[in-house]
Length: 174
Image 1 (cartoon, rainbow, N blue to C red):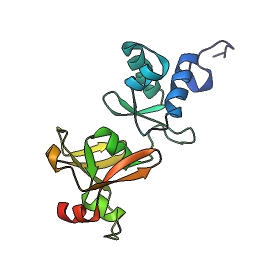
Image 2 (image 1 turned 120 degrees about the vertical axis):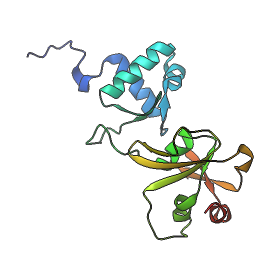
Image 3 (image 1 turned 60 degrees about the vertical axis):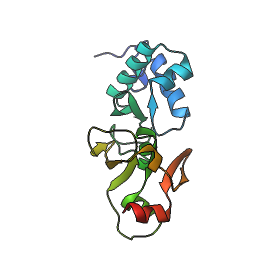
């Protein structure tokens, strides 16, 4: 097979439009991106945005977390399916309105020395399943009424403020 100079497959299979979209999405520096972000940043139509995001996911430049929600794969990644960089920030985006509590918050506040491999999320948004694996991370989602989301503080992970249960609320939730 001979490589042609005008092939769209150079630069890791990215065409000019895909490169522009990927660059704009990566510049957002958010844990998750969606078609709405592509529409807002580049003025694409809904169908075009969904198409380019699914192509980027198929080529390994984006990782599909849920329907219509993706994470940008870091350029230095050796895998097209790496574990997400900040699982708590991803949880705050995916399960909004929510807060992080349980053993995850206990570990954050130094109440336990055990390291847990499950992120405990309390959300008022209904979920079909309570145990989910998204982006290589296990999430335990518990449903709480909207008026029960209190006793939280903002904890920053990069540019994302994650609602974390206070120490007192963490003990109550456990």
